[in-house]
Length: 224
Image 1 (cartoon, helix red, strand yellow):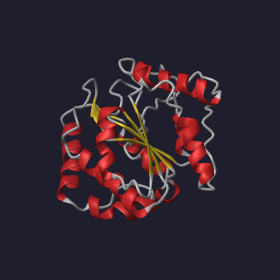
Image 2 (tube, rainbow, N blue to C red):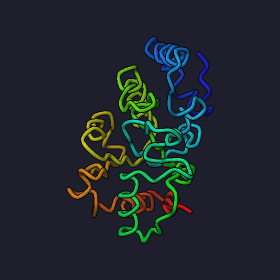
Image 3 (tube, one colour):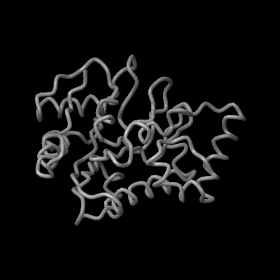
């Protein structure tokens, strides 16, 4: 099965694309669209995180749960929204932590493409959602696929930094070899939990400290 995805990911994940569960995802999405359902993000952006951050360039993984489900928001990068779209509350809180942690100047938009282009894999556990229905595709097989992605990174790379925010993301810790990789955990940056330890976690400066210790280029977190 040929999936339109960046070549290094195509090679790394080809065995997943050939499994029945992945074929079922593809069939489900085609059927839903044929029945008039509106699916986000648009098809060309479903694998945007992979196409923007090739496998051999992954240095950091920020794990989200579900794509945004309102029109114009989701574009295949976790926590990110397209320019011209209101910045969601969780991302506003991420920006506030960046400001206090690294002196980040808060921008007027929420597009995190610049992070992805520097080796930050912005991975959602589900890669699609039905309009207006959060978590609607959580059980169609995407979690099997993205768990395989995390395991593949853990097995074949070294020194990757995983940012696991909130209980859902932290449950993925068991997929990661902690002898080879760094894990930074904090509460989710949503308004419901940001006060319980996300603010003050200093994950962004810590990421760059770890990258420096590995003699890798640090992430320029500033969004313009």
